Amino acid sequence: MKKLLKAIPLMLVVLMLTAIVSACGNSGSKVDVGIVLPTKDEPRWVQDEQRFKDELKGTKYSVEILFSQGSSAKEKENVDSLIAKGIKVLIISPQDGDAAAASVEAAQKAGIKVISYDRLITNTDAVDYYVTFDSVAVGKAQAQYLVDNAKGSGQPLYLYAGAASDNNAFLFFEGAWTVLQPKIADGTFKIANSSEAVTLQDKAELSREELSKIISQVTTNWDPSEAKNKAQTHLTAAAADQKGDVAILAPNDGTARSIADVFATDSAITSFVVTGQDAEKASIQYVIDGKQSMTVFKDVRNLVKDAMGMAVTILDGKEPETTGSYNNGKVDVQAKQTDVIVVDKDNVKASLIDSKYYEASEFTGL
Ligand code: GAL
Image 1 (cartoon, rainbow, N blue to C red):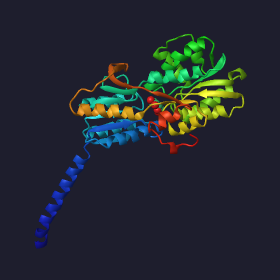
Image 2: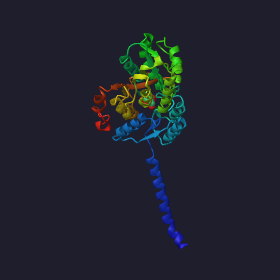
Image 3: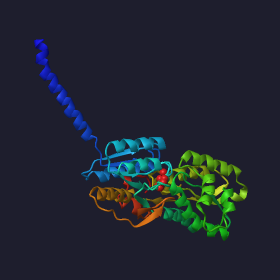
């Protein structure tokens, strides 16, 4: 009994300590800004994570970055857990633009401001802001590169697109089409791998539904192995006059490299020009080595700055600045847009090394 009495104060102290520690734990897990990115499987998003981490070094706000690993269900879980941690601002790049509506509607209900990051969340009014690169300009730049490097007339043109669940895939393709279509109409290019695109080749402007028909046929789903399989299938089916010197619209770097590898092993392909996007390290090496013709450099440092700048402005109770708007199928979302840079062998050093985006030592043969 005596022992027990003696033990009581000790037990109380232990209990109190436990309470204090767990209270600290709770406040420790309080988060101001939640960031949700689509997947670590595409190097593009690992770049974004790194640039966010660099940018966050100086902030007084607490931030947590979560990845959805290609799953809208996981994305919803991520958003719910951030809501539970009391975030005030959500920066989110959706895996699937439509499917993410449920997540951001839950955030909106909790009084959280939502910033769509790089990819627009579609068909919901629960998106407050959009920070993005000029995605139509990305597609235009890719197409212009093919036009500038076209050889002769009737050159076979192979078209590939991103994932139909990603609104950007539409913007990229729409941009590319506005530049390519007149060059298909005037006989410079001849579409080699898409019956849907051939059906629409006389139309200068395509509706979302028409774009969707082509994209569904030539999608890579942003997946290099799907891109590789499609390229192999296309080359197997291609007639002799669809080979020789060819032009290839590849939507991003990961798919560009695998498509380029396939075209490089076909002895009936004399030469090819292939586009890309994201300035992934592996593709910069490909550009230096002459295996990929170009990439579109999206300086993620700028996008990260814009997104965090906006978040901090909101946390400070002020209204962020925007430069335009994007319709997401339901509402016009106020947007801040940033430019892109075309990179090929000629300016790879100036644009990526001199700007300190990458270090020269990360490449060979520069
Ligand atoms: C897009 C993004 C591109 C590219 C692609 C594949 O939405 O804008 O930069 O990374 O996804 O992940």
